[in-house]
Image 1 (cartoon, rainbow, N blue to C red):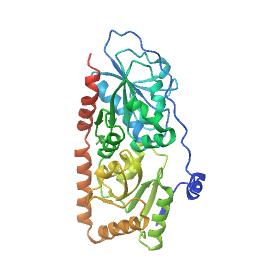
Image 2 (cartoon, one colour):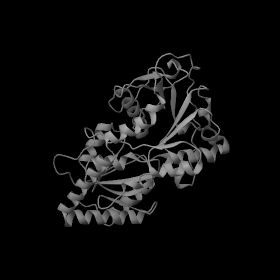
Image 3 (cartoon, rainbow, N blue to C red):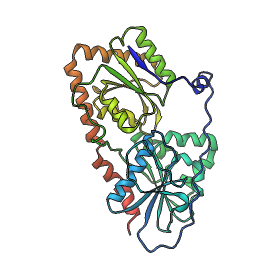
Image 4 (cartoon, rainbow, N blue to C red):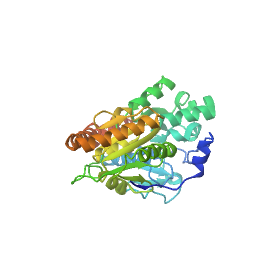
Length: 357
C-alpha cells in the first residue's frame, strides 16, 4: 500500500483532548441602504471571502449563473473589493459589498453561517437564507441561544429559507415550524464529474477536510489486516475542482468521512466519477447511500467502516464485472437524480417569483 496524506495538525491534537475549536462569529458584510428602484430586481448572493475548495461556495456561484442565464439579474457579493474564487473556473458576475447598488425591490441571499448578524443586512430588502448547513445553524443556537433564531422567526424581511437535502429540510422545519422552507437539489456537471473512459486503477481516495482521526484509524486497521496490499490510497487535499475530479475518476473506491453535513457534495461527485462509495453519510447525504454502489456505515463506527471497505475490496477481486456494473449504476443515479436540469428548475422555482419585474 502507498499512502499520500497531509501533515498532522494541532487541531487533531486538540480533538483528541476533547477540545472543540471555537468557531469565530461571522458578520455579514456592510451593504448600502436600499435605493429607489425603477429597473428589474436583482438577487445579491452574499458569499464568504474564502478561496479554498468548498462545495457550498461553488454552489452559490452556480445559483447566480443559473439565474443570469435565465435572463434574471443576480450577482455574487464578496466583502473585499476585487475578490473572487480561483479554485474553479467561472465567469460569474461578482461585486464588492460596498459597491452593490441594492434596490428596495431586490433580494439578498445569505448563508446560514452569519447567524444573528443576518439581521444587520439592509432593512426593508427581502432576504433568502441559503442554508446549506443545517447543523451549522444548530451550532449557532448553541453559541447564541434564542438570538440565533431571530433571522428565522422575527425577521420581517425573510422571504424564504433554501435547503439542499431532505435531512436539512426536516431539521429546519423542526427548529422553525413557520419558516418558508424550500428544498433544492444540487446538480452534477457532467463535463467535470463523469466516469473514466478506461478502467480505473487500484486506488482508494478520500478527502481530508473531515474526521482526520477516524480516517487514520480506518486506514491503520486496513493496513494492519493486509487488506490494502496492492492498493494506492490517496488523500485529496488542496486540489482544484478539475484536479479532484481527475483523481476521483482514477479511483475505484471513495471513503466518505462526512460529518453533520447539510448535504455533502464529495460522495455525490465520487459516485458521478464512477467510484464505489463507503463510509459515513453525515446525515445530510443519507439519501445518496444506496446499495450496491454506496455502502453506509454507522456514524463513528471505525471498525465497521474498515470491515465495509475490506468487503468491497474482496468483492472487487472476486467479481470485478459486478462491481463495475454497480459503479456504473452509481454514476447513473448521481447524474440523473442530481442533474443540472433539476438544479436549474429548483433554483428558478424559488427565485424567479421573487425576481419577477
